[in-house]
Image (cartoon, rainbow, N blue to C red):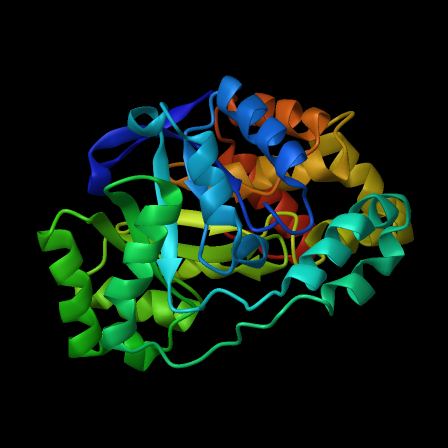
Amino acid sequence: MRTIPCAPINREVSVIGFGCASLGSRVSPADGAAALALAYENGVTWYDVAPPYGDGQAEAQLGEFLRGKRQTVAICTKVGIGRPEVSGPQRLVRAVARPIIKALPQLRAHVAGLRGGSGRSPIRAAMIEPSVTRSLRDLKTDYIDVLALHEPTVEEVRDPDILAALKALVDKGHVRALAVAGAPDAIQAANTSGFFDVAQTPDSVFTLGLDAVPPRSELFAISHGVFGSNALEQFTALLKADLNLQQKVEALSPGATPADVLLTYALGRNPTGVTLASMFRPDHIRTNCARASAAPDPQFVADLRRLIVGTPVL
């Protein structure tokens, strides 16, 4: 596994991170634990989680897995979107539905409606420490490597009360580095503030979130959405619809699947940061980690962007 220095937490981390959004909801505890173990065995040391992930179960399940491994990994969790309220019967229905959804993925949207919605509400300074206290307990740790404001507005990124609450957690040793995980305008506000250490933003061949993190920015960059938000489906459909484009992409990366192409692109777009991937199938984990072991290829990024939108973006 290729690693890179993460200055905000003063350690080396894997260039690919494990996205835990489905841990405990779409993915069962047993399958999740197996995926976490395989990723760890293949060199993954960055784990991305948040209070609402996995219907509110992801932090606790990640904490169970990381017993005895805490000093060898980096954890990024968030504050700003609360844990959903999911009743016992709802959890039971979702557990029963998992194998059905696996066989009939078209039913996923119907089952998703059974989860309790936490909703996006304004971030307030008073909510930050209680949320982090709960995260520390669920993660079974006494510190968080990176704490991110979760989808904040520009105003929240600049709010002095919110910043003071975040700084207090750093001063207490509960948090080592601060981040903004959100849209490009929030990332740009974080970049100019001088207060935050890390930026997390969606970035794929169809989105350019990393453009909000200038090349000489001091923000450590985390990108996500390489396969999500229908990026893989959209890219696959684009190739099927355009034989000429398909042949050109094949020439760039002979024998690569659409998922391989997207991951190679994402790793090249963020060569000195972490690229998150949601990966729970053993073959996906092994393939993704193998791709992450290769050197980043900025020329591949430029060539693929040129094919997709006609303009190279570096």
